[in-house]
Length: 590
Image 1 (cartoon, rainbow, N blue to C red):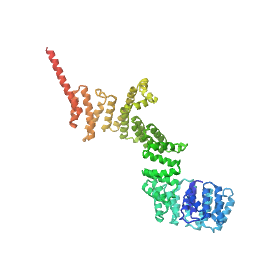
Image 2: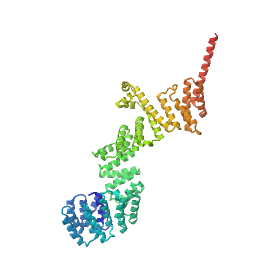
Image 3: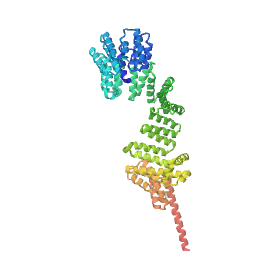
Image 4: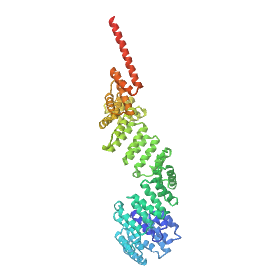
């Protein structure tokens, strides 16, 4: 039987023998086996019948029928007339001897004078054995005896869930309604509030919080309500409230290792890394190989950029389990942060590849882009940025195209200047083949770093050119795409005399000068365009055009050194030309 089918039974039992004020019973009612067991073991001498009964129930729930039987017998040795230990023993017979078990139930029920709580305990025995029709019949019978018993409605909530195969999403409203009925009949029935909050938390967290605040207002020192409030508050991102609730709960010292893990999570997600570190240390002192605690420890090291401790801890964490399917994409992405900080860029990229393979989240692509930038390998950045853009589909906008082109441009102008990266690329047969397919000499690609670097540069710059052409088609009224096309073509052919960038800079000028208003940024680009064209025309001896563009520059920047230098060159050229013509004329007159 699934754990969830048992949990609400604890609420039925919680008030059968003891008052609701007993926190041990509440731990049991909510399925907190370890805390409940510790509590009842301490109560063996004071309340042997009750303590043994609950210890027997815990053993039964945990699939230990022989151990459960021993506890029930100890309870009956302490009090032969205890009806609940009698129900426990009879329950053990249900699967092997149904008729005998039912006869015993009938006798116990008669001895109880048809106490509705005893009837419910018998109903739970049927429930635990999968006999749901008879379990429902007992719930109906208990309601006829006294419809105001709140435990009836907790039990009926379990029955609704069981009949739907445990699929809570389908029946959460119905189940929560039953828990509301429990509260309706007993406004102080705190297990009803907790159970209702647990149900609401899955589809209406704000209502869950209201329920918990209601019981806290009635019983301010009720620790389990504070803990549950911490959990629900964490779920919806109300971390400050969650922290205050956990602090209140944990101050009593009754928390479990699971509680400690929850507290670490909320501290971590609140960016309180120092407090999270102290708390996770406390947990690791108790359970040094706990999977979740080691995971959280690695996360903290990633966020605090503690590579010295983060690297060995991560290695330990990824070796805690042989079944790698239990690791999360987030695990690999946080590990990648540690690796990036340690400048182990290739390993960081491999970690992001693993994260993306498991869950293609946008931030994993963009974070990998940043690893490429940190490494100085803009080709890697372009690769991951392309993959990121693929996730956008038709939603790709001009800014994404601009950024992708920027990465390709920098790959073609900066990455290729890094001797270490060129060596790395050149050793990769895939790159040799890719460039050879462009008609380049394979032997030279393999043996000449300079030849390979130039080929790689042109490859990336052509990629940039293709992207910027798409950009200008998408936003033809923006000068940015034309400017990048000009820069890219100039990077491919830097001889301004050839004028590779000329048509694109002319388009830049057309777009900017066609606007009514100019900005400082657009004026800088305009000066850049005028400067290229002035120099181009100067080199091809078109003095008139060179002078005209220089004059346009000086209108925007009267002290522009490039324009002044070109005009000086033009002046010197004209003077030299005059002198040449003078000498030619003199020679002709001799």
